[in-house]
Image 1 (cartoon, rainbow, N blue to C red):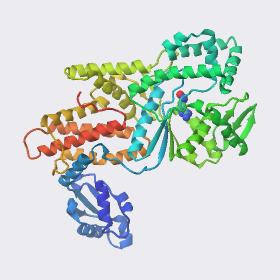
Image 2 (image 1 turned 90 degrees about the vertical axis):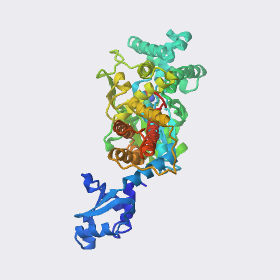
Image 3 (image 1 turned 45 degrees about the vertical axis):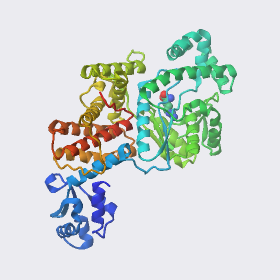
Image 4 (image 1 turned 90 degrees about the horizontal axis):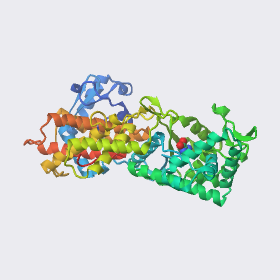
Length: 562
Ligand code: ARG
């Protein structure tokens, strides 16, 4: 139980006119620690009890069972609680030793499903930094929701459908070769796609041909289907290499194509509800009443669109997974799309549309410039991750040349650094992709936290420390108290991250915890003989457990040695 809860429950047993929750919400943290750790203001009771708040505070302080506290005193209208640091530190450390990585596991989401739409790159196109952000944020959210007790379904909604595949088939048949695609699938397919788009300028008939081939694909023509399948398979080989590096897995790869045969029903519902309007041959849903541009459901040639597939997708997810939340980790630039999507589903009468959450994020720049393929300002993900790994390796080489498994550790550090940097910023803000800052061992970085973790492990090895849940550990100095307060706060931080769809809260928490520990480490001779030696080691152990778990929630590994 958190100390605030404990205090609220103690207070509730001596206050009749307020329930525990109301009391909890009134609790304050005094500005000055001379005034205790937590204060209860008695003002709100004055009216009901018809007494001066000072008097009420004094009476409450008198009645409270103060065993769990160092002392409880009334100061003016406040009841001030001074926590018993020795007892609390012992209890927190004991709980962490007992529960290990299950510490701060919650049950709020038990039996409930959350679907997470994440990564979702487009077939035959390069995997962008936007897709990296989506992958990393979506994966972290999944871990956070699971820690809240939810069951999560991670869905990679591949962009594997649309007219562009028709164009690609035309281009491939005209200029492509099997060998070239197999050697460098995405590179080659992208070249073909760029070329046909350029040639359409002079030869508009190519566009019609592309449309025709997409129509063939939609109708299940064997040659078109086989080409499509091949483009998709080859692209996935490349994507899977990135997912392996990132150590991210999915529960479903149902992309846009999966909904090809599920759009008719969606369109039919729209028709039945009288929501479709004709506009220059196309079918649209008017969204004037919610101040959004109309959503185009079918083009004049009958072709479906991105949003048509997303409507079918959402319906499918609601039916298949009965979600309590349907989360989309997708860049800010699609915010109108998701507003329209929700609005259309709402009009269709699906109340669960309120549970669709667009977890949006900002743009990544490089050298403070917008990324642009045309201007050559691009980030190619695979080589960039490899570069992060080799930079990590160089630093490990310098710090610890005799380390075993250097390559494996360098991968955990390099990839972890990129992920952590992405996750520590408020996701709505973009950031500048700066590998040097990411992989640095100093500052608010992944490697800084990993290093703090590895340092604790080395300390524990030196001391040959064995944690013991039965032992009476206790500490009451100011610096260990800072760590204890953070350790105790972990569950609440996870809950906040989950409610706000915000992994950066976990990242910032991990930074604070690593910093608090490093401060403690710098000022305390942990290994020296002293009656507190075991408690200090136990505190170090507990810190390591929580650091590792915080990193795990972010999808970042914690090597034992670095
Ligand atoms: N493939 C899209 C893109 O790369 C992202 C898809 C996001 N998910 C969705 N259900 N619309 O922009």
